[in-house]
Length: 158
Ligand SMILES: [Fe+2]
Ligand SMILES: [Fe+2]
Image (tube, protein in one colour):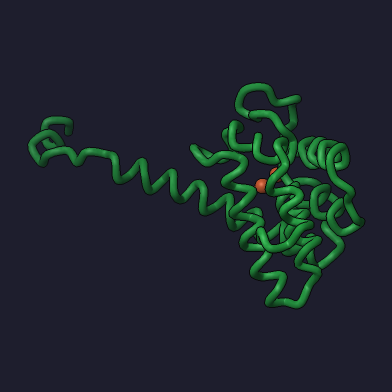
């Protein structure tokens, strides 16, 4: 992704890098999640001969809301954050219609208006795939860190 100036513009931006300080799903930061979504999008959009630069720029900015929703959410985070992310993104970057649609519609079907471009549908799906993978990692870590009870302890608790 770094070979493309339009992607590097976002990847190197201090506000984009600040996503590292916000917790997103489980222990995954907003930056890690965003980079996962962007990587899935970049590879899939190229294979599908879509506008992979707009698709990846939209993916990089889809969760650019710049707060920790566990700590100081403005309320109804799931519904509001696409609009906040778009406002923030427009403050720092020049967006085209595909990128705007990706950011605004990535939460569909939680938010009622569906994405319209193939690139926005792709990011919407990549976001869900990355979110499931974030929670799977957490679940795996939790299970693996659990100590098995001895058979006698199980018998005693019955
Ligand atoms: Fe989101
Ligand atoms: Fe996301």
